[in-house]
Length: 172
Ligand SMILES: Cc1cc2nc3c(=O)[nH]c(=O)nc-3n(C[C@H](O)[C@H](O)[C@H](O)COP(=O)(O)O)c2cc1C
Image 1 (cartoon, rainbow, N blue to C red):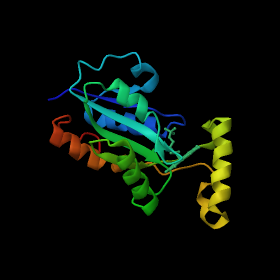
Image 2: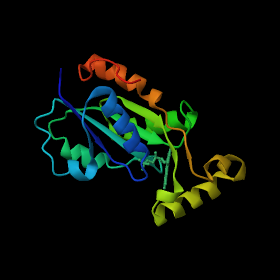
Image 3: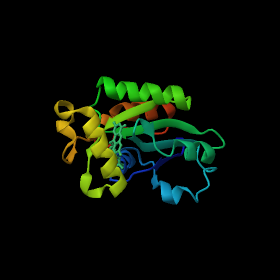
């Protein structure tokens, strides 16, 4: 089996939760961005990257590109508050694929909002988004909620099995 590493960037915990679930399911180590910065990626055949959408962009993608000099990136997992399968989520993914020229699949994972863990500037940004959205559409995002589901990782698992980076579906 090929050796894989999952690097994740998370501020309020959703992306970390998905990274931990995938680690349990595959045995592939999940390493936080702050620790991965010092790591050498040479021993790994496959690099996976999980991060969060912020104002339509997947955060730390530029950093990852520089870090992944040997082009081992095989999948990007992007968490966001847009509902799973919604036009917003699909648009975000296709725009980032176009802009970033990933050359690998991007899996969207619905998460939620966690105001209690947000930095002050992010709370302010959220307030601005909500105002722009209008009262009818912003109701869902006014309070913290968690829509993340372990089963959303099933397409990722199937893809990793095809790549030879995961053996069987454990703990699903
Ligand atoms: C300032 C800000 C901007 C956001 N922008 C988006 C966005 O453009 N699209 C989206 O789907 N979710 C957006 N979200 C929701 C986050 O992507 C979501 O909460 C994410 O899972 C947080 O990841 P983390 O908990 O790992 O930090 C935004 C959240 C904040 C605080």
